[in-house]
Image 1 (tube, rainbow, N blue to C red):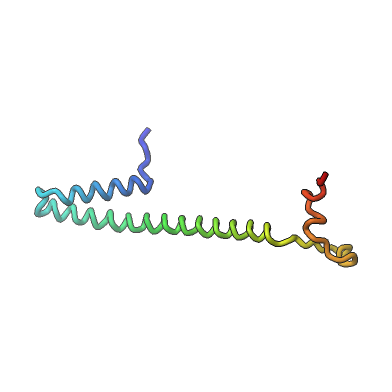
Image 2 (image 1 turned 90 degrees about the horizontal axis):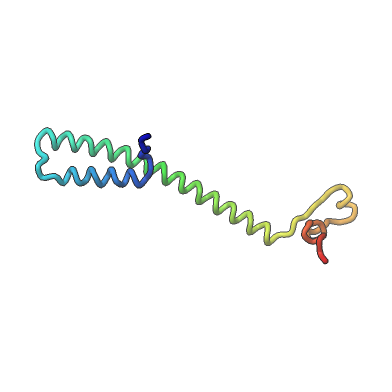
Length: 105
């Protein structure tokens, strides 16, 4: 089975290979023109792939930041529970209803 070449490392290898081909002093005339057209196509595709990877990375970064903020908020602020009974008795705070506080020795 053939390995799929779809990673950013593979893209990097393709770009450097193309750069080496362009550095070939024996390229001239139609061969050089053909290689330049090829480089143009590869460059356009590489730009799209890199932009897509950047978008994915930005999405993960936002997700991590939001998760971190949510965790920080939950650690710092007490949870308030209100039901019709709680409204009559007053609000219960986090310590009085959180299961970990019910298991105290």
